[in-house]
Length: 252
Image 1: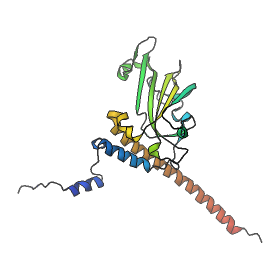
Image 2: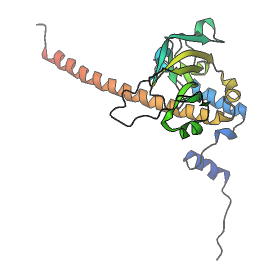
Image 3: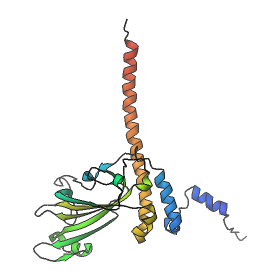
Image 4: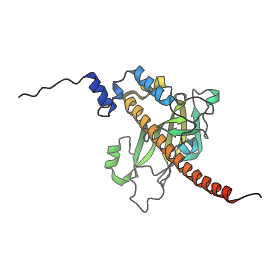
């Protein structure tokens, strides 16, 4: 007997999405729908309680430590990234009560850098390329000479504005320190990114950036929960101590 196939009902299709058997492709949403979704997501973010913010002067830098006890990083990689003593900060399109400074607290909501470009150079020559594969073919005689990066972030505001009004793009430019596997950032540029400009700004990669932003917010909330639970455990333990003190002491 031949099997009979039936077309799933619309209700069945909706149920598959609810159960996680199917996923919605962000790129299939219209610009208006995508912007509305991102605005709704960001409006739910509590910027005052969320953990993980760092001042801009520490936001871009990293120093994993010595690699002498582990595998040596490739010469094309960045092991240490720090601010130059003369780093220049430029900002644009910010209102006077939302200005960005080096002590402004930011939270990264992208995986790594949303965009980046590097210039690689070959030792003992003036040969340069922006093609990582070509530079990699030069072996350890190649190194990253200079470059720029871009990070999507949220600012912790001084006022009561929501996360949808505190989305920022931070761009920076860096260059290698001669004779060292270290890089210094010489210039930082911060600019607000209105939700209405999100799709156009990121262009072909807007779907990936939007989805990763939501994933990173999930991570930030999980980190916040973990920290609050740790603090709650500490205070429960301390509360127990004071409870025992109060039961053991009398002023008579």
